[in-house]
Image 1: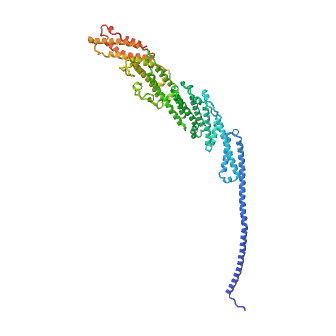
Image 2 (image 1 turned 90 degrees about the horizontal axis):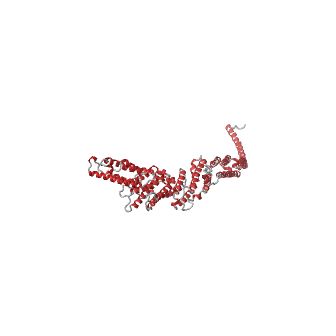
Image 3 (image 1 turned 30 degrees about the vertical axis):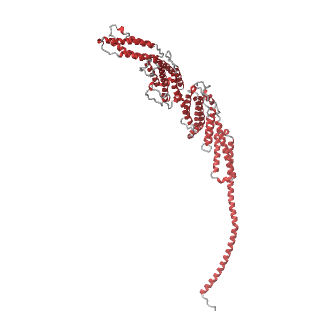
Length: 623
């Protein structure tokens, strides 16, 4: 009987045998896994290059597709650019300016699209080629725009402005269509890198054209007189036409800039200044050339400086408010010509002194002197240049023309405040001062001639030293008559104005007082009597009254005889003189006569004239 086996031992044995089998199986599995791992590793080594190559092929496929797309895009762009190029090749005249610039804008947009966000494409030589072509096409097309721009500007050819001035024709100007084209091109370039270039072209072409036009006038503007010793004739200088042409061109250019830059207001002053600056420089140079000629020959061409004043003031007025880099050139010209004109005002006064002092004798008829003729001829010359004289009165007072030692009492303007800011007032004062200077110096010369041993006492109707008042008064009044006649028949009349005419009247009245001073002394004799009642007169009193009537009668007849020698030609002066004599004599005589007419038994023996008879004589005295 087999031995009895413990159940637990049997379980252990069975489990042990099972574990052995499992261990063997696990060993076999691990061994197989190792083989598989080795095989997998070997496979991985084989497939890695294949996968890498596959990735490369995938990338290449994408690049090829991208390149094909790029090539397609290049082809499309090239086709589109080619169409635009064909249009541009036809030229602006055939295509039209508006369409021409629109095509350039489209090319520019294409170029911008390619350049923005497409940096990788630039590595493609084919794409780089179209970029270069587009840039060159745009550049050449814009160059054609500039050529077209200049061709329009040059459609106006250089011309002689004098012809237009003589015919009163406006200077040539662009047609509306041309202005539109110029403005369109300027607008196209505005804001881009070529903006300053196209503006420089406009400035250069316009300045060049105007300078060529002005060159027609320049030779004539450099001549003041045909010969050096010939006096200048008003308006004969070519500088006047040169100035007129310049003003015309300034107005033209202002209109042109306004038309072309209507949308760009801020640019206008700069462009206009750039166009005009060369013209102003040329004008200033020519102005100084003329002024040099004037300085070298003041006697003959001095008055031409007043035309230069008008010229420079006209140019400055036209340019007022405009920005000019060389505006200081005009200011310098103004200062230079002002020095010359101020010297002419001073010289006019000095000339009167010299002419009056050169008189050797008083004319036998107490008539007009050469000094008066010369002075009024000179003043009338000033009047021919009224506008220039007014322009030269800027920042000037009497001290600029009167000598430093002048005596105010000799002049008819005394202690009066003038508005020196008003050039009309200043000019009137100058003319009046010239007339005063003439009268005073003629009187001084007359006193020296008639009373050589005493110091002259001029401009003094009450002078006790002057024993020839009536003759001197008549002498001056005769000369003032010519003065007044010339004033009335020339522009001097308006230049004097109200104050000037008042001064002339005061001057005449002064010398009328000279003429009636003896009459004043005559009537003073009638004032010396002590008036008492006629009924109580003593014999001595009557004798005094008789003596006064006798002296009056003799003095009256002498004065009547003397006054008749002096025949005034000016009606108004005759009236003034007669009025002065009557107003002096008659009131005193009537009073004296009424008091003492009954003092004598035989009045006619002592009283030669009744008041009515005396009035009749006086009325016939000055005719």
